[in-house]
Length: 441
Image (cartoon, rainbow, N blue to C red; front, side, top):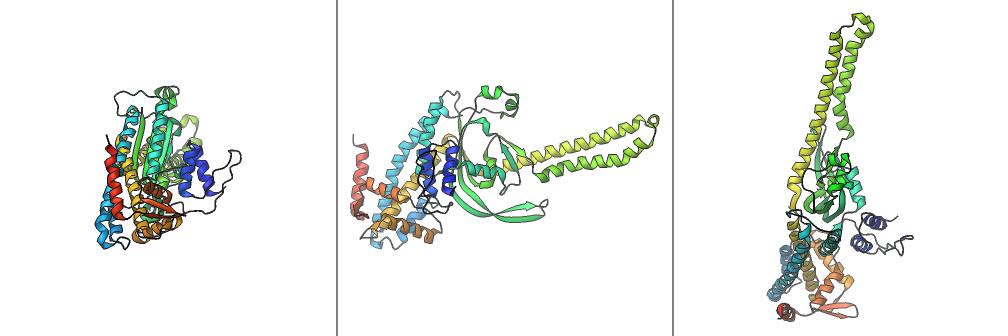
């Protein structure tokens, strides 16, 4: 099975629809072709892209536009015109984003865990997630696959702990990432005496969308009820995190239990084993070397007291280890948590708005600097090379989406597969008319 097919299948197995799975697979593998039927899924993969390269442009709108205006792509005597075009595009998309955010928050209101009373249907959950998927797609977010989750459960990156996640407690679960980079991280070993540096894959932004099972589900089983989180769990919980190591992904879940590594188990069990050996060497010769009548109660009392001491010490060590795990996770999450529930929606829409503007501006500037026009491939390569040389980032520029944006604004001309744009002065007139027409009552 190819990497593209494995990724597509993992999204399907995670509960995503075929359309959403296909769209997000194409983010990583543009040449992937959807299988004709579930029984015979044979993908056609012509070019294998770097899996760490996505459509997300990790440069602020201000930095990007400033670099474009100072580049050779923009004539010095027309910088003001280009600056005004950028301002108009930002205003138009901000208006669109405002409507999008209002609609999204309206749908989420019934699902928000912060409501005093919750009453909603699963159809409302499905409808909201469908809209959320579209907004996240506009912002170039990518679903985290089941394969990536499994890798996180099996490995460690930065935090020296492993956690078990009780996935069965979730009725709905969606995970998304935005931006991936490789960083050198330092961890400690040998009781903190040695530092080890290694490369780790970091998800720059992660969103979790979780809905827990209802109260009846937990009440049906004593073990479930015992593990239930002691807080209100109703509603659809949305959380935003930053700089999450891929292999430590499980720490962002709220319902985890520490999974002891072999070293931790040895560290806890060693005092108990050593105590048994010590007691055996001390008392067994007395027990077997004397008559039953000579064996005093004090001897048995010493054995029991010794055993109790070592058992208590082992239990205390176990509790201390679990508490250390909790402290590590709590401290890590304090700095990684960014927003919860409704405010996350604002962040998502803001990022999507910025991505839309950056794509449109890049396409317009590069096409306007080429009087003879550019093909879609030429525009794609030019923008990606410029971003690499200027900012040192690898981006799979979403060229078809950028061209579509300019076409919707009536700024684009097409001739035999080559695209050109109207001149800056005419572009400002068109954008001004477009803005005036937004509220033509």
